[in-house]
Image (tube, rainbow, N blue to C red):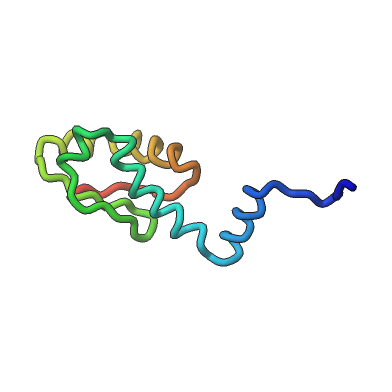
Length: 96
């Protein structure tokens, strides 16, 4: 017997996370993990603390030259990171 209201498990989970207010914190955690994946080992080795607060990704960079380079490419990085996560999680990046 087939059910007419069948939904995929992914849709049900997304709906549940949204209803419980867990979707945003989960996406923020995914964004922090995405930093090292998107930027690679080289940049990740110069990275300290990474966290999201109020749709802004804060990244501590230990190299002033790298920080300057990343600041110039900030808009492209925001797009790449949001695409990697699959949601509009951040609007800006602040390098410290």
